[in-house]
Image (cartoon, rainbow, N blue to C red; front, side):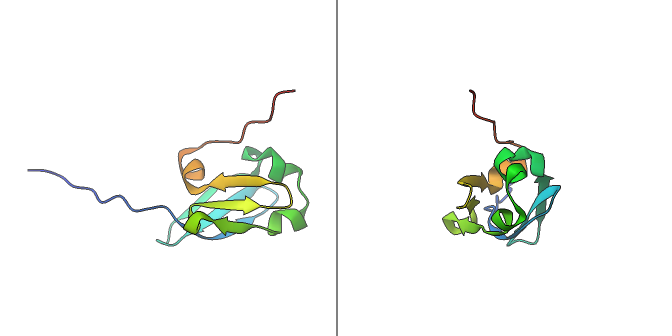
Amino acid sequence: MSTAVKLQEIKIKDVNVTDDTITAYLFDGRTISVPLAWSWRLSEATPEQRAHYEIIGDGQGIHWPDIDEDISAEGMLYGTPAPRPKK
């Protein structure tokens, strides 16, 4: 007997960024939320910059053009914080 699991592609439908969290709402009804501190660029951005985003790659990620930040749905799901550049 074999067990088959159909993997569903992770696609972002909408996003909300607060002072504490980045929340992605997926097309399949799930919600992914990670601490805002995972993105140092978003942590340092203004509320207006945080609110100005684009969903990219057919829902595979989010781009904030004002601060040049990208976060993927997979990165949020699997827990990959953005590293700060080394000086």
